[in-house]
Figure (tube, rainbow, N blue to C red):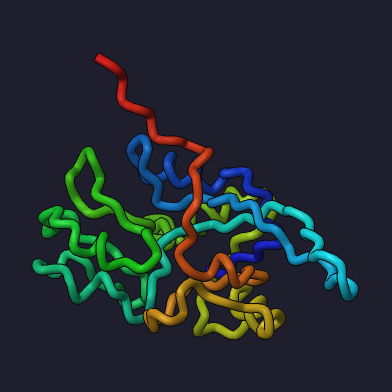
Length: 212
């Protein structure tokens, strides 16, 4: 998958379509668009003047399983429930999964969770059931800005391959230092967002405990 961040408007259509398609339980997400406030550096000051603050802007970052070529989640599973399909999609065999959570902890991208309904590991599958039927992932089909592009990277004529070639100098992945070889690529990614970003949640904020 290739994500053109200049086209993402943070509408969360991808999030909602994923929830509907995959019956994702409440307060859990297989994909979501994180929204950040970034302050750009101001102009360099003249001698004797203080540095001026730059403009503050919103930055969108769609997040999902990166379907890595060398997934960190795969070798830690004690029952081999996580495996990689021949097409590269990383999936979980729910019949084998024991819900130990080792894969959740191993994922560098916070893309896995334990499903509170099934007690099994859960994650984005690129909507494998749709791919097998010749359809696009739900998040790609519902993206109103056309920010998400999906295709076969082994086919140089696929839309995803052409997009990567056209923007070769501006393509990045999340957390490249982990050497997992992610297969979700971002165009126009701010370096400050390439690592794990701490922030204060404002959307789907966890419900505070009620007083007795």
